[in-house]
Amino acid sequence: MAKCALTVAEEQFRIDNVRSYCPAKRSVGNAPNANQTRKYVFASGEKLLLSAKISRGSVIQTLVPADRTPDSPPTACSCSARRGNWLTTVPREFVHRAAVAEVFLTGWSRSDDAHYSVSAQWPRGHSFFTPVSGSHYDPMLAAETIRQVGALLAHAAFDVPLGHHFLMWGLHYSVSPARLVIGDAPATLDLDVTCTEVRKRGTQLTELRYEVVIRHSDQTIATGGAGYTCTSPTVYRRLRARQLSGQPAPLRQSPPVPPARVGRLSEFDVVLSPSGQRQSWQLRVNTRHPVLFDHPGDHIPGMVLLEAARQASVALAPKHTGVLPVSVDCTFHRYAEFGSPCWIEAEPGLSDSPASEGILRVTGHQDGETVFTATVTTSGV
Image 1 (cartoon, helix red, strand yellow):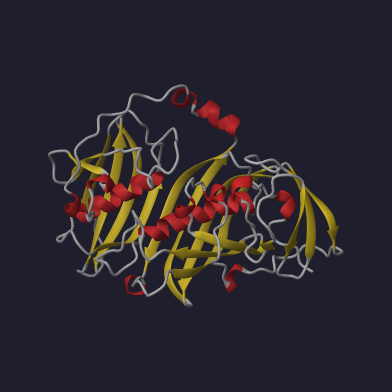
Image 2 (cartoon, rainbow, N blue to C red; image 1 turned 90 degrees about the vertical axis):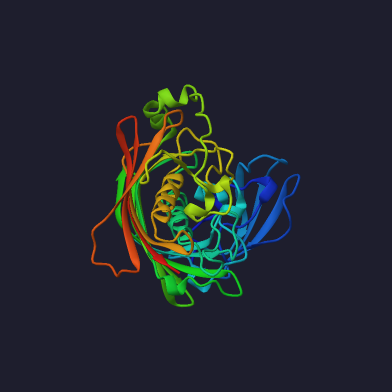
């Protein structure tokens, strides 16, 4: 019988939110307050009794097999994500999110060392990734989903310890607008993931590049990929010693561009401030935003920069409503830091795209250095 891709012994459970990490595994009972044996049933039919010594509010330190069926050679997880797991999310720590509501991935399985299947779900409504024109999923959901895939594989498939730091140096996606129409239920998604470049130092993952195909009802609705470097806490502290020694005084909150001009309903969600020039803005940083700043950090998240690129493209579109960022290809050159203005500039790009689409090159600069560059293609709904 096949072992699950995530063996129970490798998992860390939080007592206040114990749940199975394997899509088809079902736990019996709630989180206990003292020593207790718990039974898990796997999709393969394998049964395993575990004794766990725990205390309320702590992390389980040991999970000891008490009784199990004979082992067979490890194979790919039998609980294929392709069959769908939309009952619960993967652990939020595995996708670097503090809020469970911001976790879009629901399961995963390994086909081989380079290919994985991941299941996901997009909500019909979201506080930040709001439907475009009330009818289409926000394509930026694809960007966030692709980002989460990379973090999940690092921890779950490549055994990168929680607490390691990730430097994303590129992310791209492309969507099919006609297939983003919101139906009468949340979109349950199947993701095919191919790791195109895996680099390790010894057994430790140091770099990963991967490509993702996102399908809904057997139709491809989006493709994309990303790449990143991961480092240990010790190395990260050495690299970021100055930034970690003390947060700079926050910049005074600059006034937002009118929300409607960048496709937003609320000033709270606007990340651009006017600069006095039509194609230039100052990045507006609000660390109290619960989605863009899901948890504290020592730099401005990459998803904030992607949102700035999207809002810049909407601001320069002939119409400011019903604008879909159908594709984004972004390269991150350095961290965007707190305490110093970051300037966003956009200019039209050259392409052979249909007249209904617009292409912009968006660049972020800070302290005379390029922070990111992005090519954004938009289309009307």
